[in-house]
Length: 95
Image (cartoon, rainbow, N blue to C red; front, side):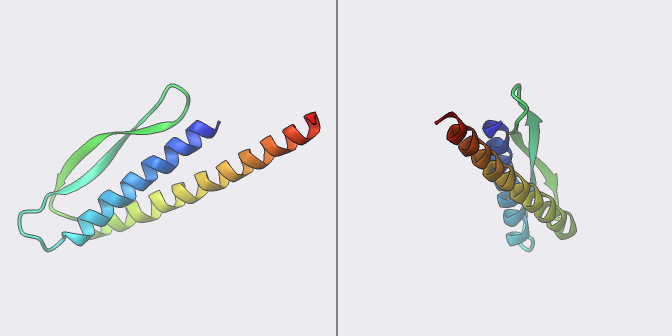
């Protein structure tokens, strides 16, 4: 369970970084916008499958990515915290 949340946090971080690069380079001549492609893993997690060049930067699309990836990041951090607390309770019961 921990690994799926950790992989999602890492994937969200990559999405945020790619969107930030797109926004930062919006006015850079010749810059080609990038998007992080995600794929599910065998254990139920997610991983970055690669980068796709999407053409000219689209600030609106990048802000949507910020919102979605930021929400996923926060959600999975909360899931990690809950998992950690639950594990602590189980270990306390076993002691």
